[in-house]
Amino acid sequence: RILNLVRTASGWVAAGHARQPLGRVVARAASEVRAAASAAGLPTDNVMVKQGLSWGGDAVVRLLQRDVPSYIERKVLPKVPPEAQELTVLIQAKVDLVAELRWVILDGELRGRGWVTNGKARLGCVASKAGYKNEATCRDALARSGLIKDRASRVRLEESLRGKVEQVLAEAVSDAGGEVPQFLRVDLLLDKQGRAWLGERESWGADLIKNQDNPSGRTNPTRSEVAKAMVDRALSSL
Image (cartoon, rainbow, N blue to C red):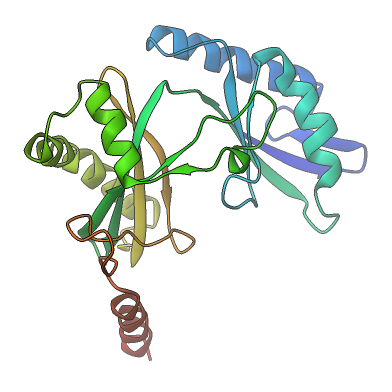
């Protein structure tokens, strides 16, 4: 559930629910996430809370459902800069994650892809403290979970997810009024059943992905390609 919070003279309220106590609105949203997670066969013991205006997992926390309202009211909102009048907070079901596939798109073309996964954050701690699992560790996790056996099966798994990435791209184009994002990265979370869940779609803040056939080599696309694409698009609008 996405909560759009607005600062007022009397404190923070949830957009569309200004007459209701914020804690009650947050608690209801967390309960709805838990119910949806249960229906989808996902873990229901805790949820992920993601704060807007954040970067690199520094404001992503794993919490018990009952702790979400107090966390937002006592830990998040007091630290919001006074210049910010609005804040978006995402309450998300926690996926029983095996590995995360990240796929880069440049000018509407699917390019490099690779496996990079956050570690499991301790309850109540930000995700950035859990570190990352690299490509090799992710492949091992996929193999232990029975999702792949060798390179060929890994490539088949990745290609089976191409349609989902294209779907997310189409949604991004629609959200932008028909304009194709110049740079986009789509992150898919794979659970132990092999189901793919959208982690996020990220634009200019997203890291590039190294060519997985040559992990020590250049990214795909390269930084110079992205820079040239940016300059070309800017010049075309002059």
